[in-house]
Length: 427
Ligand code: IMO
Ligand code: MG
Image 1 (cartoon, protein in one colour):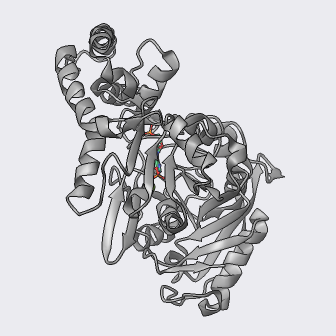
Image 2: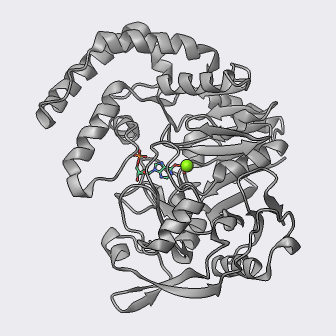
Image 3: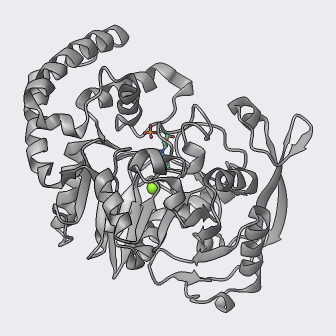
């Protein structure tokens, strides 16, 4: 039995979806355990492009059951829209292959309004959230008094009275923070959410119990991480992070499956670095090379369309992500994007206030002070999108991959040299 985890080791958008898609061939169940519709996964095969946000990528494979675990925050309207966009294209998406945890928390309209209000108040220090109400829904989960879980939607009397109380409090708080904010109407929210609840009902179950039965039955299971380890609320570049444990730390809490059940931990590493939103980024390239990477790599957000900040691969940050997640192999993604550069750099250490270190700083101001110390690798200046095995790669590209493996102390098991399923070298 294989229980696999696929997790991003940077600030998200490492092309996790592509590796998940390839591995779903040999897994029967794919589980998301954290985040919500802030994630954005693009998968390409048979000339078709699919963009997923809340749904696990596994949904695209016939025969795979996709699970939205208890650790997510679910916007039911977004869920229904995404399901419809798939069923319209002939992808199966019913109670038989898509399961939603009754313990998952619900994103309500006020979470989205609050997300915008708090971001605006932070001014220059805005986190640059996706504006989907993710952080405010997780805040209410931790607060408990204002939290609604999927299971609560099926208890209409208590749901209605709690919602009335919550919305009254939200209106008071929101008006105090921003007098221009629209007044929320509890009855209207109740009506729409009761309708969403009815529509998603065939999918809603106790997914924890389901997953434990599946484990006992020896089913192959894959945990699909969203975001990346450096956006983890505990281990990432706080406060410029998302609100969940987006490293593999979230698997146990967000699915109910203990970490020790996992026997294959794959870390996903983009051949360079990107970041969307605010926060320190030592290897950022605010120059023509950064723009070249953005153009060639189509580095614009799947969810919000924002241009991603681009820079060199950061071996210090990525190795830290790998240690937090406990990965034992890595996938190097988007290597083709670097093909036309004369010279490449990989950060192997930081200099922070005159001291050399390979430790990743815990405080955002220390990371801001970090100057990358680079290792330079000559470019190979040759298209590699047609390569299908390691020996098809020019020696310069192989040297780059070897350097990544050496700096991270981990074997590379996948090299991606283009967006299509076929453009993957398995080692
Ligand atoms: P995938 O799954 C990259 C970033 C946002 C922002 C911060 C907090 O595609 O890798 P949030 O809306 O979560 O409160 O925003 O986290 N962020 C992502 N960055 N990829 C993602 O997902 C992200 N999801 C959230 O840009 O900086
Ligand atoms: Mg993405």
